[in-house]
Amino acid sequence: MSKYCFGVDLGGTTVKIGLFTPEGEVVEKWEIPTRTQENGSKILPDIADAILAKMQERGIAREAVIGVGIGVPGPVDDAGVIYRAVNLGWGVFNINETLGGLLGIDVKAGNDANVAALGEMWCGGGKGYKDIVLATLGTGIGGGIITNGKIVTGSKGAGGEIGHIHLVDDEPDACGCGNHGCFEQYGSATGIVRLAKRRLAASEEDSVLRTAQAEGTLSAKAVFDAVKGGDKIACEIAEEFGSYLGKGFAAIAAVVNPEVFVLGGGVSKAGEILFGYIAKNYEKYAFHACRNAVFKLATLGNDAGIYGAAKLVLG
Ligand SMILES: [Zn+2]
Image (tube, rainbow, N blue to C red; front, side, top):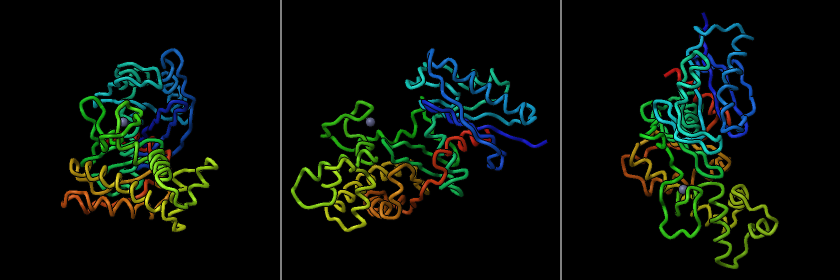
């Protein structure tokens, strides 16, 4: 009998579901809407219905399903207890027990960013490594830490929240978390735009980024395109940005000593140029025994969550 597992990535608007073989082949993937009304009480029943319908359609027996893994947008501990997910209207309850009860199949839940890191280790940019840090540089910095093949969950599921490492004391703007001076205020796509605006306001020097700012197209991509064109101000902004990323990653490395940092999200599209600025600064700030960590691109994109969720149940 062929064996299967399901990987579920629960987002605020859609639920991605993948049917996998234990070897990491995607047999099929599809999406259903996330119905957040009535405090999100329909979400898990909808997911259970979708999975049971797929098993019936394909003639897959319960005994053939190793388990269902699910990544959710909130802190989840190792027992599957979620400590609130504001976007979904969820309070505190045990996802493993609730969804497992609806399915009659073993369920393992994890935080979505941590689960994505597991996916990148299994089949993506971190393949072949067991100690990885995933950093998704987008609106914020999403992160997940894998040590010896296992997610670092922490006591309340907030392990791997690398975006909120405190880096700067005198930051006037508040981070989304309410604190001031968090890593993601500098090292994300939003962060580099903030750095760019501050740098442009600090002098009157010429830069192609002034045109971009006037046209409302100042973005992480605009900065790195200008770096490629040799724009002096853009190079200074990239240097500052790389310095924050180097400091943040060096702080993480001193705790978990990863083999590889896997970078995803919009900013990572800047590619080799970005890696150069980060690696140079990382080597400057990292403890000597951590310096040989390498930087690689995430390769699974939006599918990292379903891969990692499937891997959760495979162990
Ligand atoms: Zn924060």
